[in-house]
Image 1 (cartoon, rainbow, N blue to C red):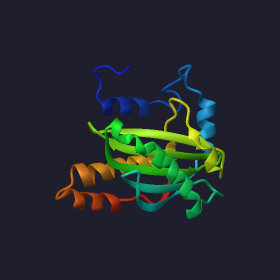
Image 2 (image 1 turned 180 degrees about the horizontal axis):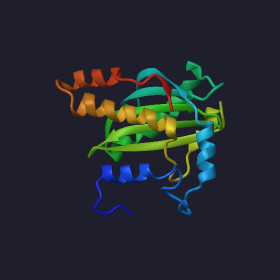
Image 3 (image 1 turned 60 degrees about the vertical axis):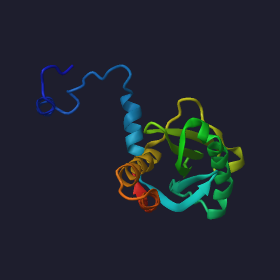
Image 4 (image 1 turned 90 degrees about the vertical axis):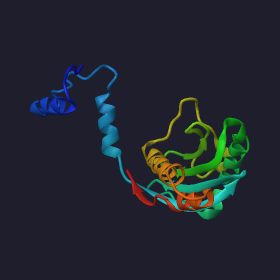
Length: 191
């Protein structure tokens, strides 16, 4: 526990120790082997912005994340957009502000669909659907507690910044703010 130390002092003290000495032994809950295995397999994934669509009365920015050797064609997105529409159809009861993000992740171990919308009180609503690769008819709500993976979280982090910059802190009428929000997109690789 760091008491009466500045962050700078704590970092300086940690730097004096040999690598691995600072937290030795590791706390019981830390699985060092699993962390190293994840680190060894970590790689970039491609993010593609597909466009802004109206889905169940919401303006939705649609993204595709593709694992290596996975590619989603535009026609494959339609049944997934329908799933998002089903989720967003009841969003008004959850305080929806009418803006959202749909992430379709063609993962290495299956497909994931995230339906994220901004709601009242600076909050957001998130639903995650999972299923076998390339079988959108098999997508089902994810288990309780499931949260975005590192690649999905990168897109959501960008979208949080775009929402704050362009809509909340933006200037001008709502239509101009929404146009700026719609144009603020993430493409390329994320890690």
